[in-house]
Length: 504
Image 1 (cartoon, rainbow, N blue to C red):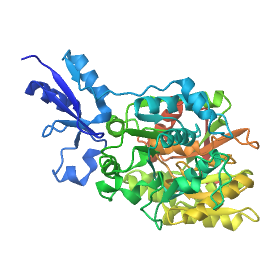
Image 2 (image 1 turned 45 degrees about the horizontal axis):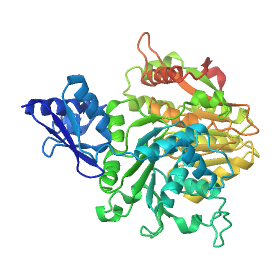
Image 3 (image 1 turned 180 degrees about the vertical axis):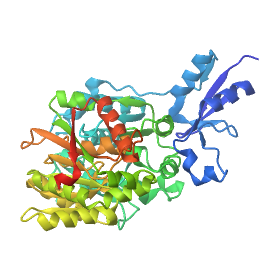
Image 4 (image 1 turned 135 degrees about the horizontal axis):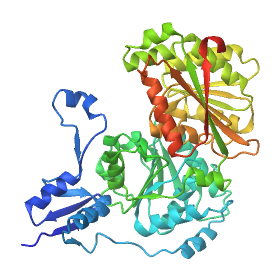
């Protein structure tokens, strides 16, 4: 019997992959098996309840995520196995750039979509599945709007998932602006076909979960426990900032969308691991890199950008204290270090334009920094934002910063590092050390949007040099990881060495 692979469609979530030989199936299963990064530190692995691997191919029912068709083709080609797809597996729609441009004209947009935004829009409609990799400030919300309007015109209903309540409000506001509409009972839209209040429903804590409006914008946290029947009406799904969703919650929602043909994921960053990418591609579709940050800066569509790495030097006594500490204890030492916190305060107050300070721990660091800065701020406005800050308050602070200069926002990474648009933001300070590629790039993106008052955006990356001989402390290693990211992304940076005792 020939060594063949047959791929058929189960639904919009899964494919069935039948191999003519059990040996081929074992190879296929191994091909789609990966160790999860950091598996060795998990309680399940330590207690021997899990081997640390994720298996994307299910040998029991021969299923694989639909979005991984390209990887099946690659597997078969590398091994020279004949591969056969069912006729309904690789369906695409005819949709040209010219058709897209003609459609866009009918929307009466206040701004002209950029070429890469049109390209992403066309690719999404043609292929139905897409993981759109496009950096912060590249206009992903406009891409989402074009997709929604096109599919809505073809009588499709859709679900847009975002990670935070702030992003629900922000995306709703963006859609309202694109449509020249307002959130009022009397529509002022020039387009009678689309009125924001009638077409779009928002869902997060305190909002009604059921609606007959054709477009729903919701946090994924609000819906992931809902039954499959709730999701049956959606023809398309758009996952914004999809790299942030918890794996189980994301798969819970996406695997319930069994009849949803159009599946578009959007992110500015992937964490660099194969498992992360393949799960997202499997649930949405193949990655398509739309544009890079450097390209946008060269096109003057993003602000010029610089990084100042401020390496704080500590005395020998501090080095001794930290030398044998565990990672979390080193972090506790740093965030409670009075001279370090006063240095961050003085740095923020020395900057005249709007400044965002990002921290990780609310009680042990964020509140301390906020109090220190408020005590010396005089007439300057200082805001504190964290997970429990009401969505309306966050939006009000964002709006104030767009209008005024000299404000300082002390905010948690989880709330203000992703998706929040503040064009009138000149400075970002990393107050807490982090090695996360996703968090760093997303945080940098907060300062890259252009504004009439801004010639250059500056990131102040605070690093802590507590090396003991050749032995690096944990957070200094993380700083080196960040430098590698900056080099990889071709971000310009300069390193400044600062004696912490004399600088405060």
